Image (tube, rainbow over all chains, first blue to last red; front, side, top):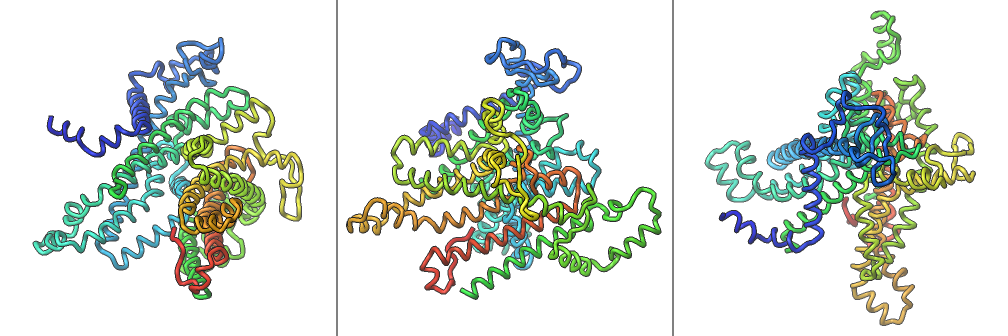
Length: 304
Length: 330
């Protein structure tokens, strides 16, 4: 129970406990995560198995808003008779998976390039950082769209649907790496002149080993903070790509795809098909952003 | 000042060239331009002749120079999807995007700055706290969701505003404008709010924190001691000193507005450049994507240079230093 006592005693736990907003945000995040990852167990229907759908259940309004509602579809159904609640649970799961994977991809690219840039220096550093500067001129969503379009140009549009999820993860990862690379590079430039690195070099360790085993652990703090803040952004970017019709296909809908599909029914007054996924997305991103803000302040030694 | 301007221009040219290289590689090596131009039954020999005629067998640097030369004249080749000249397609849709972006920027400035000043002057008033909380939600809402909510409330439930298209437009030369008809103006309202909302919250939070900072300084206390009116202090002294960061962010955000028009135009079926770009991404229409990329890069660079020059108008310290120091990086 030693680690437990240490965790309870730590500054971070104290700052977490004393902020009501953060506790609420953390509970909401946990609830949504649980709902998403337990979807196969908890969801009342299997929305993407055509055998279980019935068109006679189509466009049923939510229970609390209309007497036509049916308790087996608490948030209503779409035009195919799919249960909106179950679709949201599976969709949230996909959105979260893509969000996490994209952040990890961005971290891997950014940390690798940042380490190389900072440790090797010279012409390689100059090239990497100029590319980063130019990319930073453009909003991330544009970069992701361009990458997505280029992949479509290289492989056929039909095969694209099969690997859409990897394309989206790659596109978002490649549009968010700059921040990590810059942070890691500046930390490495400070660390590499310290005595412990010189000592490691004197005993003949390879640059690779020095970077990964000795320099990298010193930059994990800021990298984790950026990653938390980026998670919300990555989820929004994925939803936007899917909404624009260039993200996840409608056979495997994320929250953004669900909103796009529901948007077609909005004009005729069937608002629940797009509104409930939209609310889920907004609440999820708000909660994750609040957690990220708190973590940034809690880990910032200047504010302690 | 001259040295500063020249250095900025050199940097801008470097950025444009880098983007030009990316656009050229997309144009030349992603997909085959010949395949897109000819039919299925064209023989290999005819293809080779066409390749030779178009100069696709020349060394890459020469092709690149030709590409940049053509781009500078607005020639970007033919679209793979519609076989129209790309330059004309973009030019036709440019007025729609620029008018929408202009209205969104005006909305975010004209509403965001007063809200920022108010919450900065009375930070403890309940209405300021409410605005702060609302702005936090505004930052977390994705643009397309804001658009859908507006359509749901004002077009579907209340039936007050049109939910798609530009309404009526009037042509002035090649420029078609929304500003001269009532229907056109009504159609602008919801897209502009959707596009400007994120920038509005950003500008409001920025002005607020800058105002809080300035109001604590000594020169505001002295201004009060001199018996100046509240109005003169709040606007003549305090607000003026918050302008440098506000101009920086607002200027850079203008570029972001034009880029995010992609999303807003899709939500409202607004026939602008952004919608064209999305269609070209969906159909892998490389020439349109390359041209759009170059155009956006050009706009961003122009905006950045203008923002840098505006510093000289706003900040007297820079003029006396001969422009050696930059006020703030970004």
